[in-house]
Length: 348
Ligand SMILES: Cc1cc2nc3c(=O)[nH]c(=O)nc-3n(C[C@H](O)[C@H](O)[C@H](O)COP(=O)(O)OP(=O)(O)OC[C@H]3O[C@@H](n4cnc5c(N)ncnc54)[C@H](O)[C@@H]3O)c2cc1C
Image (cartoon, rainbow, N blue to C red):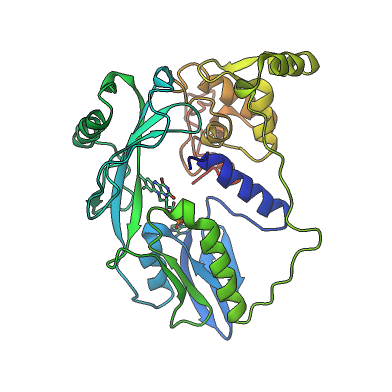
């Protein structure tokens, strides 16, 4: 099945946050120590104390294990480059098309995404730097050639965006989920593809492991908080669009013309926790269309600044120091780095 990965992750994060989970973004674990039955975890945002630690740090799981005094495994980084084709090709394929798999990957796929674009990729290249998410000319050439073999109508001229991610690969090429020699410290490591698909089952397994280790978990009274699906104006029938625009004029203001994202959707996303440009983009698709934010970036920044009551210089692309503009003082001096704004699940 093809799912909207952003909506799935934000839905789960919002439900968790509304159910009482304290989610911290832009918060780097730098060291940890164990005393009695408590882990003291030093982070860039202060200390966190916990009885149990789940090491789900992807390509950095080896480094986190070392902080816990465990020399458990080497995590290799296997980069995958993906290329997104214009919606003009919507309908060219109706299902995911797979080639024969290679020993290390499913091969280059042609994927009709949830949003109507077609994604081609990924590559599978081992890289030394786990932060290496650059696309390359060689990766593009290989992906395009492989995709054309599957669907000859695909052309490189239809590429509107390209990006890459790194898979966390252990030597046995398998997930490693379970307790370790350090009391209360669990591996949830080596979760390479299909980690998103497997995530709900992994969560159930981890709950079982924590229970077995003595954590008392009682069902939350009233169950988990439900989150309502955000409105995606572009996907609605025109009669419904007209009804919304008549009831709230912000639905009549189009911010992202490529993806027909309205001002009301932008405000809604900010209210639900988007504090960065990428947080907005992944929730609403503003900036994901053919012009890739060429027209709507400044408007999105204005709306973020206005709703959050901050200056444009405080708006970041994805948290940390990824500011988009700098403010010059009267003297012409550049203002010092402003405090970054936190995004619920959108900053990393
Ligand atoms: C190109 C590509 C295509 C894929 N396609 C699919 C697919 O079609 N279907 C599918 O199911 N899966 C797919 N996957 C796999 C899926 O994306 C992964 O399995 C999944 O993201 C792994 O989740 P994770 O939480 O284990 O690791 P990650 O998503 O890597 O998360 C690890 C987190 O730990 C954080 N972290 C690391 N170090 C620290 C630290 N010191 N302090 C604080 N935080 C830290 C990181 O910032 C990160 O947020 C694909 C992966 C790639 C790269």
